[in-house]
Image (cartoon, rainbow, N blue to C red; front, side, top):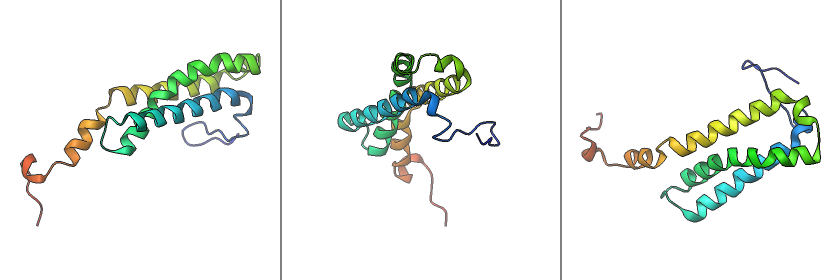
Length: 122
């Protein structure tokens, strides 16, 4: 496993022991993204896609734990650090998707300059 400046970097081969858990998280991210695109709360499809994917991360991690235990017993205990990091990242993505006001940010970004009180630079 190659170490990055942040202290860890996992390749697809490094994730092999916890691959069922990782794939479950990826699948729920894409399911969440698809549901968010279908529901369409924001006028921007990319905001819907990203928010849905983020919201699907942590539930996917929780759903993936029993899948991992069933398919590869003992691998969670043996790879505790990878599992912990994956769970922390999944939780972070879900919290950001839940609490960051992306909708208001896009509305503000699309607001004409006259309504903001700003004048364009010359």
